[in-house]
Image 1: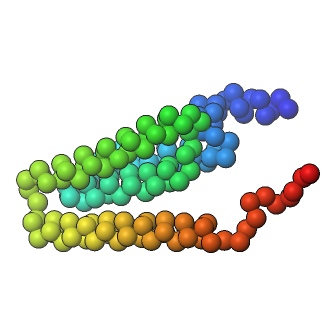
Image 2 (image 1 turned 180 degrees about the horizontal axis):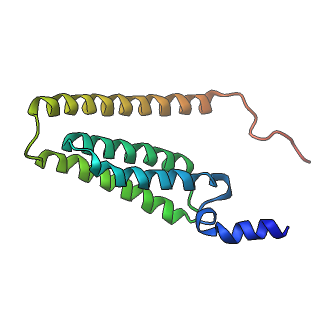
Image 3 (image 1 turned 90 degrees about the vertical axis):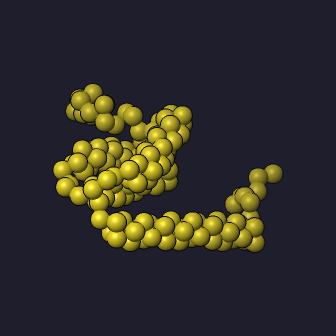
Length: 146
């Protein structure tokens, strides 16, 4: 019992921010911050932007799926911040001056195709899930109590 309270007091700054079901999200958060800090070490500006967008998008998807913060408002603020950073990175990428235009064209086309496929996949997934929920024969309640 004494060891458990020592552990909680020592690591409260990592554990108590998140819901108990998402105790592992502290490692995702630390890894995201580490990768964001290491991205400027990459010499190519387009690759920096791409990797930063990839890191933010992946951790954003995990954050939206898990909603790890104890306070719901913090989840919404974190989601909005990640989306704003992604939009900012996507729009500022066009202002880079010393870049190979052919590589940027291929990269832009690739990202556009990926975003379109992701959007279509999300719409199809939502329609399938909605149809499964609507036409399933599951009972609303498992037990009936008189």
